[in-house]
Amino acid sequence: MSDDTHESYNVSVVIETDQALLVRFEDSTEKWIPKSVIHVDSDVFEADSEGTLIVKRWFAEREGLP
Image: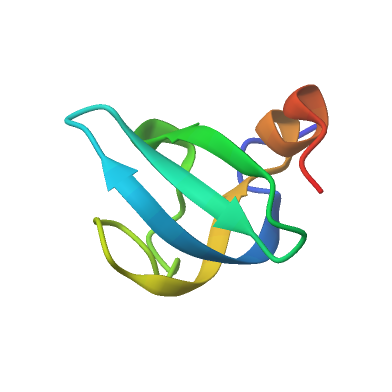
């Protein structure tokens, strides 16, 4: 599977570190997302933001994202 294949989710960012975002999904689950797997077209990149999170598909599948 290609690295340029992506999945998108509606989220809000809870906490940001230098390396990752803790995001809350619509079903209220929270998950750490490494910044390295977030696509440039994503709406969320920093704390206190919300919108569409776009991540690499291999990561979404590996982590079982909701």
